[in-house]
Length: 343
Image: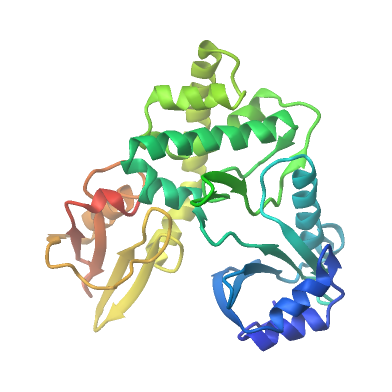
């Protein structure tokens, strides 16, 4: 993947690429201005950079890594993501505006989209705000249903539909899609696709009533009546549990690594500190033990089980920090308010 360490690297990347899209010239003009650059995500497949100018306008550049043959010939990640976004936009499905894309000589590419300054991910808005306010919660669930309905009625199937893949605009009170890779137009929706489109409600099911979930499935048009909504909810729950079990070995490794979206690992002396991230997968603001937290000590195996279970099962009191000593015994730190973070 191209090394991007500064704004000048971004400028060189764009300048030496054939940029396509509706506003390639505007992109170059934007990055030549006084722009603040932040890397907000990185993995072996892609990196995402946020660029903000002095007026608060934000653009996001998603840089795709080199693909091995034959995928570098058939996938065209950047071009395909741009075209999917434009197809959704044309069909009046709410989605952020994509401005440009380019293919790189190394087989990678990038695409650029506009940001919404007053927006946060749907997952963050729910766990940080809507979960604790009945009116905001109701509106948020209505927006999920509206977005799902827009996809369903226009025959767009989203294989990775979850609350981190749409934004909630705080100023407009609206939801719109981000990261549309994988969305495709289909002729009809068989039952298994309807089940997969229930994922946002299944993701939040520990915090929602059955009536709230069923109302969402009805409002989204995924179910035609209450009986169908109940049946769909039951099937979606079973499917979601199966997927969680299939994903668990990988999720477990990522939690224990301390180098993924769930936890951050720090080494202090001979101890390892694993800090739990928020429920919207951001690290804590400060890596410090709050004096109000309660510490409990456990043998190695028991501590690991409690720590891992806290990421799988709804619990009011979650461990926010795990300190592992050289003999692998652990101290777990709990807070009475820990149900607002983690998991």
